[in-house]
Amino acid sequence: MELHNLQPAPGSKKSRKRVGRGSGSGLGKTSGRGHKGAKARSGFTYRFASEGGQMPLHLRLPKFGFTNIFKKEFQVVNIGDVAARCEPGDVSTETLRQAGLIRKSNVPVKILGNGQIDKAYTITAAAFSKSAVSKIEAAGGKAEVTK
Image (cartoon, rainbow, N blue to C red):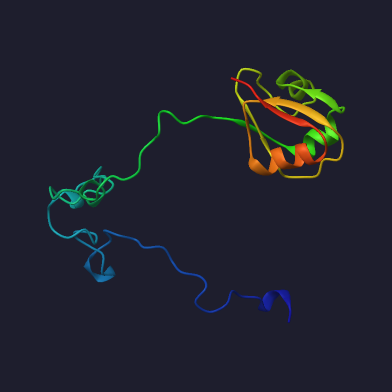
């Protein structure tokens, strides 16, 4: 193989379509656009999901689901993270914020039972999972729910 023998693989190079260059090209006269109509004109853009006057599919299908306006948003903290970052004793939302476990002090906190805890903590939060309460009490601590 030498440089002057190199050539692209057969069929990998295609010449571009030259429309409107006479009837012999196969794309002369109407340039592959057919006769008349919006699609034959320059500047025509096809509207997404347009079905030509028929009700579009996305409007024919039923809506589903809803947004619960009474949903309570919580900042979640795992019990293992509390044990890793906080000193044993009283743990409040402010303590969790200073430890970097939560960002906002005005959004309620829920403590989840992921991880291990071996020291006694008195944790004050808006909500607790059942597993978190059982792990806190097994370690000799207390889980206090705030209003």
